[in-house]
Length: 79
Image (cartoon, rainbow, N blue to C red):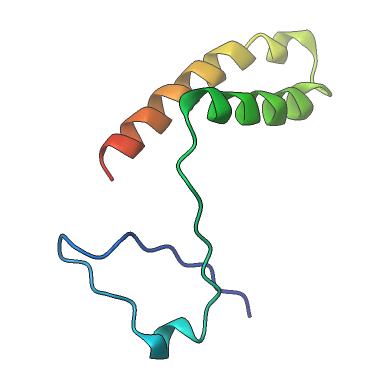
C-alpha cells in the first residue's frame, strides 16, 4: 500500500506533526522554486509529452503553458 500525504507548516490552525506520526512517513522538504525554474521544468515536460502529437494539437501547447503558469501563481498565493 502506498500513501502520499502533504502538509503545510504549523500555524493557522494546523497542528505540529508528532514524532509518533512522523515515524510512518518520509519527510521531503525543498526550497520554493522561482518562476523561471518552474517554467523551464514544465516546458521540458510538455515538449516531451507533445512531441508525438500532430501539428493541430501542438498548437495548443502555448495555451496550456500560459494556463499552467496562471494557475500555478494563483495556487501559491493562496497557500
